[in-house]
Image 1: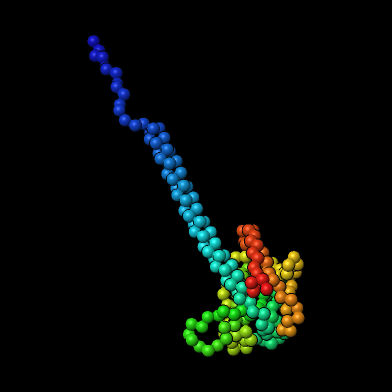
Image 2: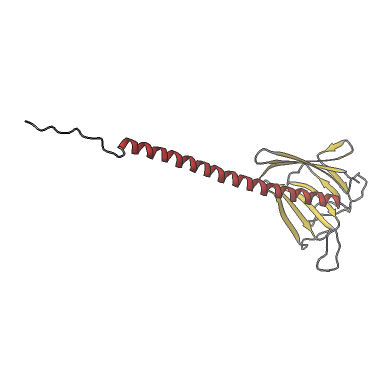
Length: 208
């Protein structure tokens, strides 16, 4: 009589298919976590960048406002002596990037040296940047020290116009004779690289 062979019992354990499914699920979870981390880091960097840009913009607008509020109306001549003396010169900007030239007062004297508190100020637009130049004298000579600083960078364009009451024009010159009226206000339209546009208006010499 042939002995009976008992049936095989199912072995406890994990099949290959179950292992592959588990690995697939783990891979999905890991990929999702990596994507979320990457997006979070990009969002943090974007916030930091925007914050830095906002701070830079706030400082630049404050400097322009302070300069124009301290406008004196005193005539000033370029150090090269190639142009006439102007109490105010405003452009749209012009061919060389110049936007405004004027003299301001209120320049501090931290070293206690005897000198004027007047400065010649120039704003220009060049290479995608708004640049401020200042000379330690209203009538600089070639040897006069000039300080140049970039107030805003990464710009697409800057437009300017100058006006009195309801009148606006793209160029405004006030010669040393003072016969021409001084503009009361300035409007700057700044276009950033992201195609964002900012319009800022300022009074000149407290709206004189």
